[in-house]
Every structure is written in C-alpha cells, then in structure tokens.
Length: 575
Ligand code: 5AD
Ligand code: SF4
Image (tube, rainbow, N blue to C red):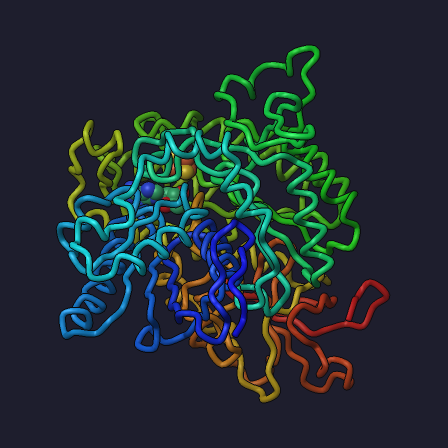
C-alpha cells in the first residue's frame, strides 16, 4: 500500500487509488475560476479524485459568487438538490467555497443544515484541513462538525498577506489541463487579491478583503513556469488590475524573499513615487513579463479601473507587440450624479478623456465594459446620459446588469432600491440594443484587415458559428455578465467544439447556438473579438489547425458580435 506522505501545503496525502471523489462547480468570475483551479491542484496532490458527475462524488463543492442576487440563487438551488440527497440518506460531504461562504455564512447554515463546510476566498489554502476535519468528525454533532462558519476576509486577507499562506497556494500551482481555457493553452495568473475601492453597490471588498499585491518576482516566475508547460496566452487578474503597485523592501520574509503586501490608498496613484522608494508599477510589471518571458505569445489583463490608467501603461502596451490591445474598463454609468453615488471616483468627462488617450495611443485597441442600470434614484435623464456614453465610446461589448441590492454594501443601507423592476428591464433592453449597434460598427471596422487569431476550438465536420444569428443571442450574453470580478472567460461556447458548460467571457456565448456551414475553427483576436474561420477550399495545412495555434486571418465579414475570415499563410503566422 502507498505510504502516507505530506502534500505541498503540509496536509496528509491520501493514496491515489483510494482518495475520495470530488465534484467542484464554479459560479461567477474569472477569480473564482482561478481559485477553483488552485483548489483542484491542491486537492489532487493530496489524492482526491475529481469527477464530472455530482452523483458520483463523495464530496460536492460549490465555489460561489455574491456579486448579484441571481448568482446566489443559482447556488442555493444546487444546495437544495444535494440537501435532498442527504435527507434521503446518501452519504456526501457538502462544502460551500467562495464569496457566499464569506458573506452569508451564518445565514446559510441556518437555511441549509446539510452544509458541512464553509470556506471563504481568503482561506482556500486551509480547505484540505477543513475537509479533513469534516471527514474525521463524521458522526459528531452538527455544531462540532461545521468546519468553519466563514470569516471576515478583510481581516484575514491582511493576515494572509503576512502569513503568506494564500501566496503558497498560487505558488504551488501547476498548469491544469482541466481548467477552462486549457484546451487552447490559455491560463490566468493572479497579480492582486481583493479590492480597496468600495464602490457602493459592490460586495467584493467585503468578501475578498483588502487589496493585496503579489511580489513581481513570483508573478514573473509563475508566467515562466506556465509557458514552459505549453501556455500560449496568460491573462493577469486583479479586481482593479492597473492599480497593481509593489513597494520593494517593505514586506520581506526569510532569506530576503519578498512577500505579498497590502495595496496603497488611492492617493498613491495621484502623487509621484516618494524619493528612495523602489516600486514596481503595473506598467513595469507588464514590461517585465513581456521582456522576461519572450516565449509567451499573448499577455492580457482584466479588469481595469478607469481612474488612474496612466499613459505609462499605454506606452508599454504600444511598445510591446505581445501585450494584447484590449482593455476592459467598466464605466458603470454615464451620469456624473450616479457615478458619485456609486463612489466610482471619476466623472463621465474623465472616463471619456481616458478613452480618448487609449484610442490616440493604441488605435487598434478594443474596449469593453460593464454598465449597471437602475441604480437607486436613476432618472430617465441619468439613463440617457448612459445611453449617450455607450454611443460615444467604441465599446466592442458591454456587460449590462440590472442593479441588485447586496447585503453588506453601502448602497443597500444608504439608498432605497427605488427603480421599479420593469423600468430596470426596459433600460436593460434599450441599452442592449444600443450596444448591439455600437458592437456592429466596431466589428465592421475590422473587415478587410488581416489579424492574428488564437484558435480556441476547431472541428472536423463543417458545423460552426453563424455570424448572422447574433443579434438576439447577444442579449442573453450581455446579461450573463462579467467584469471587475468578471463573470467568465476562456473557451468559446460552441458546445460541439467541446466547450465548458459555463457562460464564457465577454461575447462568446452569443455564438453558442449558431451554425455556419463553412467555418471549422473559432478563435479570438488580440482585441478579444471572436472570429469564425472558414477553411473551406484552403490548402491542407489549414485543416491541421489545433486549439492553441496562432494564425493570420483575413477578415471578410462581420456581425455585431463576430468576425468571419479566411486563413492566410504569411510569414507571421505560427502553426
Ligand atoms: N448589482 C448589479 N451589478 C453589479 N455589479 C457589481 N455589483 C453589482 C450589483 N450590486 C456588476 C458591475 C461589475 C460587474 C462585475 O458586476 O458592473 O463591474
Ligand atoms: Fe472593487 Fe470593482 Fe467592486 Fe468597485 S466594482 S468595489 S472596483 S471590485
């Protein structure tokens, strides 16, 4: 029999052949997808085996999202289903991870006595110990069995920064072939955890805690390791990624190793770096990764905070061909009055000035965003300001959300949710139509150009996305959501292409049910535009395209959320 040994984080390893089976489902954002990937790696290294069917699992884990009520309701309904199985006498451990465990811990235990384990996003490194505890105390009273009833992660994130445990989790990470995006060799790297911005509608500063920045050397090393493992594209993650800032010499562990550190306040971005301080800014981090990981073909980042997006970042992007020309910078509203109530820290004019700088310095950059409609007190006039902002900016897409009051936020205590549901719905639909026109214009402007495309899915028969069926589906997509914690990403959701069963980043799910008789491959441009690649009649080499290939494509047609093109064999194309 295999001998028990210690795992990467010091927990006992269960022999592989006997390890418990785990089903893990992820809700919400890209941060959650990365957290789930790290959880999978951590538990696998301890002998747990992952299964795709919850009915076959000894342990069912839900990694949850609290950003909107809708996401929470979905998770609650899953908990109800497992609860019924447990009530019927089935033996299964049920764990809730992520933001709901953090935000809703006590209430969840009251409503769902079948939950055995809660683990907030700031303590995922402790999940193996919590699971171990649940398994060892089976048969004990419920009070004794609850592994952890959530914690306050603004506190624990700060502690974790000092204790370096969460950092160990990121450092222990290996490229996970089961992660979304892995099939086309795309991976996430976290650079910042948490958020210090406190937009009044948002639960994230409460659930994910204070902003903590990882040391630049750890980030660069992680990128190198992923590229050595075959990764083509890396997306850097942070709730406000451009506010990355690491001051060297302030958080140093044994043997001079730099540790994660809590981020500075907003004023740090408005004043010069104090004399004598050595700081790695976001622009410098981008440049370092671009230059020190030359085998990385694409570097992208989400999500940007429109305030303080300096020219230094745009200059590094302009000088670095492998940094993707794509900026996701949510405006949230076009009304100064509403932006103020949201505590966003910028005005409509400042947002437009930022976009003007982007388009001047990076004319080929695409811009995406998020908008909330129906924020408390939003009038017709406020909404019209948002409509005119959406018309004024060349957004390739916007995720549009109806305001959802969230417990623990400033908005829920300070403002009445006074915009009626049907008005929110109407504004949502109007904005989706406007966005659809803008998206169509943006996509049409690429016709005639030759672009580099990262192939994300391909198939041997001739069924694929239909560029002409996008308008109505884009509505569904835009409400699926992404954003600062952004919903989704990775694979284009063409089920016949083997995509994941989750909604995807940006506009991808808009193509989910479309068909075009000639497209065999689907991929994305640097600017995150989806391209259906028609390889009919092209030479044999085109038929060998695999997910993860970078190819040159001549764009010949467009729809609101899709480009269509044919591959061209040029010197720049890499196969
Ligand atoms: N209601 C509606 N939308 C919200 N978002 C965040 N909090 C809320 C809320 N309470 C949206 C924002 C953010 C995106 C991820 O989710 O637009 O950028
Ligand atoms: Fe932070 Fe983004 Fe939430 Fe604002 S919306 S508090 S910037 S995570």
